[in-house]
Amino acid sequence: MNAHTIAWLVYHHPAMPSDVLLLYDEAMLAHDPHPDHPERPDRLRAVRDALQQQPVPGTRWGVGPPAEREAIARVHSAAHIDRIESLRGQTAALDVDTAVSPGSVQAAHLAAGAAIDAVTAVVDGRAARAFALVRPPGHHAEHNRAMGFCLFNNIAIAAAHARAKLGCERILIVDWDVHHGNGTQQAFYRDSNVLFFSTHQSPFYPGTGAVDETGADDGIGYTVNVPLPPGLGDAAYRAIFAQLLIPIADSFAPDLVLVSAGFDSHRNDPIGGMMVTEQGFASLCAVVRDIADRHANGRLALILEGGYDLAALAGSVRACVEILAGSAARPPNDRCDPRSDTVVDLVRRVHAGTWPL
Ligand SMILES: [Zn+2]
Image (cartoon, rainbow, N blue to C red; front, side, top):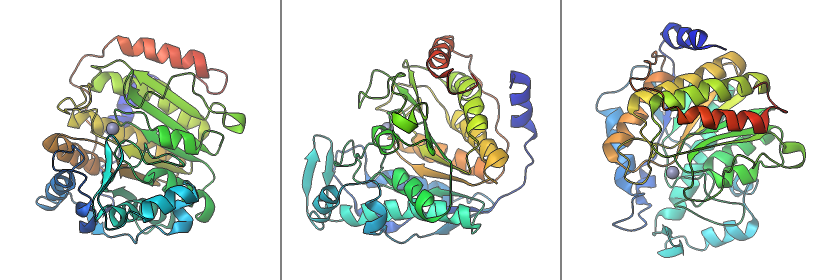
């Protein structure tokens, strides 16, 4: 697909307001790791306020049930689930940057439950598209450990549920958080039914996500890592999505599309080193929306991950919700950083045997 075709898709997507389900639960504010912790309750308050004070037409609110143990156990070990359960009502540190407060375990069950409800809603037709506005985030949580602010891997649990219970056969997970989704990669590393595509700053926490981590056994080629030098902005991300994600997704032909929607790749984020703007996230969201429309009967769910500047987070979530509701994306304002070409070439070389790149 050439640049002209991409531009056409961006500008001429029909502007039809969609029924967008926003999943949120006040009880997720009770996860309060530490007063100075960047992953703080005000993040979700800021997102909620941005979407409630001036509602995006076509959106409505819902509350999902907490995830059941059976659903969590598709991704996490019994030992990990037992350890998290044992912390209900307590304050504890799980690693140097992951901690729980008395409300955290309930919040973690609600976050995973909202992710499950988001995929269920878009698969059974209860909503056209969905955004699970959750915390704690999930994509660092591994089979047997909490990590990087994450207790349970919400998006992996939702994808595994969609495979086991909703009849989904091929699931695309796009992760544009500034950090590599190591837990999600691990969950589906040997699985050719779940394609994991991640853009992330490198070198950076958590240290995984090298381009040659491509999967194992039947899953070889179904993990696509796009490690990025710091400083890339809207145009570079857009070019990477156009040149890598679109051809891979069009070949894979998912029947469900999920996004680990982290906004710590925003230019104002205090943790990440990227230069993406609200408009840039909207543009990326439009790409995945159009992939879902082409292949998955529109079935698309976003799951909130990181994002630590309150205004940037709230504005970026809102920009994506507008895209979910049918708005057209605007083209990037910045010049494309030529370093993105180097990244694209590298990923092409590694994945050319599997995908039409
Ligand atoms: Zn992150």
